[in-house]
Amino acid sequence: MKYFLQVCVLLLCLSGSAYAGYLEILYVDANVGAAAGGHVGLKLDDDVFHYQFYPDERFLLVRESWEPFKLVYNRLRNRTIYAAGWSVPDDVSARIRSHFTAALASQNNDFSRYRFLLEQKQMLAGLDSGLLEVSVRGLGFFEVAEKTSAPPKILRSRIVAALGQDYLSEKREAIAAGLQNVLATLHEGRHEAGKLIEIVRRISDLRKKQAAYDILNDGAGLLSSARVVGMDEKLSQQALDNLNHAFSRRFQVLVRLLNSERSDAGEAILIEAARCLALIESLRSKTLITLDPYSEDAVEKPFDPENPEMQHYLHTLSGLLKRRCLLLLDSGANGTGAARDYHYLQLENVNGRLAEIGRAVSEGQWIRLSPEMMMPGRKRTLRTGVPPLEKNALDSALFSIDQDLSALEQNLAEKYRYALIARNCVTELLKNLNSSFSNKEAAEKFLGGWIDPIKDRVAVPHDFFYKASVSYRIEQVTRYPSRRLMQVEAMQAKSSAAAVWLREGNTVSTTLYKRRIEDSPFLFFTDDVGWPRPILGLANLLWSAGHGLAGIVRLPVEGMDPVRQAARGMFYSLPELVFFNIRKGTYLYDTVYQGGHEL
Image 1 (cartoon, rainbow, N blue to C red):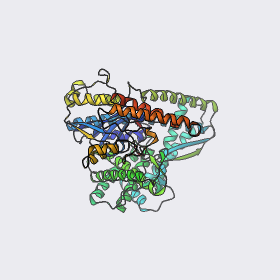
Image 2: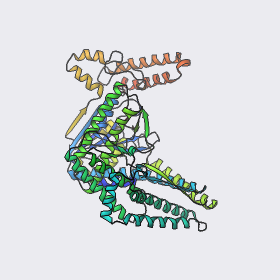
Image 3: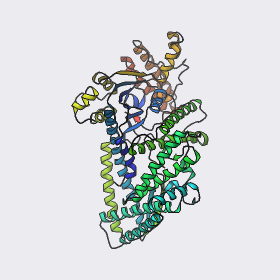
Image 4: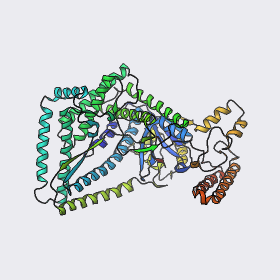
């Protein structure tokens, strides 16, 4: 496949089967904004699978670790999580995990195809001015001028021992000759659109391969900015042994790629070579060093490192990531080759996120975000001068690419759209869970029951969680109280419950919550009361209405924002009149870890 780099690592998970057989359906209580309907997820071991809605209107499956997931939803978004869990055989757990992983791989493949077509279009457009530009993933990790450091020498000596003294130089010469031949065919008369696109693809593949062999032949090292160090402390002998196993595996993959006749192996060679260099440096320094996993277009968010709450959040998240990193280091030798490949990708992601927090706090006022699993692949563009092509042929090829792009855009928009009832976090999660089994009978055997998202009309998170609790073979329901409720319950255990509620049950006297514009104006918390909820909801409605009238008076000075927020406050007060609570208050920095919205 052309998109080997973007897809293969996710597919590697499919062969793993050594997972604990415990499955949990998660229900995250409602709150303001996109969370008004609640949210659901599926938890397997440390992994949580769930769907999120992104600003570019993509509705995508996401996998993330449990502790960061809980940190965001429990602490920052102030929402209670309920987990209904039951035991399943290990092979069933692995089957479900593999099916969701395959869905992630398919999703990634779709968007990789789109990026590939964009790359082709950019290369074709450059030919109009006599310039062929090839963007090479992985090449941006290397410092071409760095040729004397020990890691490149060690790596090159290992390659020579495995493949022979002249292997790299002979391959480089063969690739250069092949590239010249293909460039020559580019100007042998007029080509049809399909033929021209194929020639440009071959040039791109050869140029990327040439770049890879140039790097290995010249002994280039890693750029300092390409390396990330999440933990400063020296590694244990167990961790070093596991990193040595990881190096053996990465080098094995590199040699296989160098031996391969694949035309599109250039970028994969570069990334595996960069990984090998990072592992060599780790083993020499006895400190974990991995490649920077963030892409050039990663979203950057500003933050205030002097804010105590932000410091506390980043400190907590760093602790979670560090523990995860140590766990991955200690278990690095487990599993098959394919499972170890994915294990190392996880290590790169966790260490990269940990290093990003440290860098952001010490160096600047912004932090890079990526809620999805990242594949290291820093780019660099190579430029080659070519005689300008005949305009009609080029226009025809560009028109063909534009048609493919337009068709793919429509397909992706339809395939990854969000629909309130027909395609939301409940329906898609349930469809994936059901299709993990060959038929309804197999699902009933291992899950204890069957829920059909269409026939059973399950689209609301709370309704789905209730049906799951009574349909599946649930052994235990665990409650993880929201940040405010956990603090209130701790206070009530030491003092009068009534006194605590009188102080903490409103936004005026509370010591646990600071009023935020994003939450809309309200007076009373109603998530921890029963029969008084309609009365308190009416008070909240009047409170918001009062803010709205004040906003109208200040309209010439403050604009419409206060009026809009007051209207939102009235809206979120209405469910309280019929005993239902949505608004609970939120805390800062809910976008530092995650980039999407759950729906």
